Amino acid sequence: MASDRGTDSRLPGQRRRAPGETTSATASPEEPGREPPFLDLDRLEARARDRLPADVYDYYAGGAETETTLREAPDAWRSWRLRPRVLRGVSTVRLGTELLGSPVATPIGVAPWAYQGMAHPDGELATARGAAAAGALMTASTSATRSLEEVAAATDGSPAWFQLYRLHSAAHTDDLARRAGQAGYRALVLTVDLPLLARRHRDLRHDFALPAGLRMANHPGDDRPTLDDLATATWTFDDIPRFGALSGLPVVVKGVLRGDDAVRCVDAGAAAVWVSTHGGRQVDPAVASAHALPEVVDAVGRDVEVYADGGIRTGSDALTALALGATAVFLGRPTIWGLADAGAEGVARVLTALGEELAHTMALCGLDDVRSVPRDSVTTPR
Ligand SMILES: Cc1cc2nc3c(=O)[nH]c(=O)nc-3n(C[C@H](O)[C@H](O)[C@H](O)COP(=O)(O)O)c2cc1C
Image (cartoon, rainbow, N blue to C red):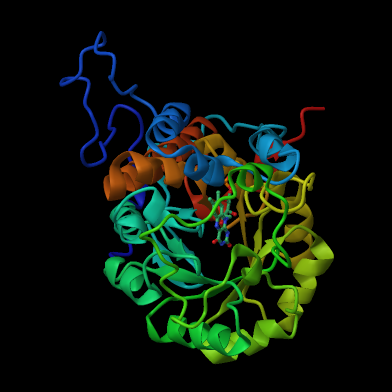
């Protein structure tokens, strides 16, 4: 990936369209299917709901228990308020940054999410291509319907990370970590907020299982786990350097919501920490990422990269996270709805549109570089 692709984002009036995006010249305002000239995630989600089987839609959209964590996540970002700067002469905004040394064109990446083959026949390959087209970093999940080697090949040289769960046997898990290093991923993401699977009522009602015809492609033939088997209850801080050594990759610890835990991860050798509630699919009710992020950043200091996800739906949500000290943010469901809608192009469209929103909001706030968004760019309402 070219290091400076998409680095200077065009501001309104200079707007670049994503490949395949409907233009106002080709769609009349009366046309019922007309795309609005902004990212309408509710509409994308509604289309996915119409298109996908109910159990699949609910698996993607749902959360744990009362779904309080899930529901509160977007509003938690909006419990912060932006403090715009004036007269800063901002005419272009730089979205390009580096994540653990890998250049990316945008600080908005794709979070790992499972079973992408249910959303689109090309599954993870389409997501990888879409992310690469947008210059965004993709994190491939262990629970993929395509093998990690196939996904790595589909990124076509764009940086990607591999997210590790525990497989049925410790030996298989170790092997997966080694394969991730050999396949060219740039970091290993250990997801640690799944010591056991939470009660996800929608899935329990549907008795959800991977549909016939799809398989967990990273698992060897003799390893046929249920969702519960993926749980990482046996992992401890000692596994951070162990998996780092096995894979030869920097380790990112995903699912951290406390400053003290973040410090222990870094002390154990983690290269970065990822603040996440697993999209509201694990502890419920849990502190929102938007409220945990400042504590984690303060605890580890600005020299350690911290990422955040959960309920990021607008450019201002992303800007709030950057102001609170995140180096990058990641999207789960918005990329699911994009993939279900239009495959690789749908994923690219979501990522590009969110990047444009971020650039737009930054320009409105007198900010021109995602790498240096000052902490005092946000405040609490009172
Ligand atoms: C359907 C679905 C499957 C997921 N699968 C995984 C996974 O395999 N590994 C993982 O670390 N996180 C997984 N997550 C959590 C995401 O990585 C991410 O933390 C979350 O989706 C971010 O919240 P958002 O969906 O509100 O953007 C999953 C999330 C969803 C919605």
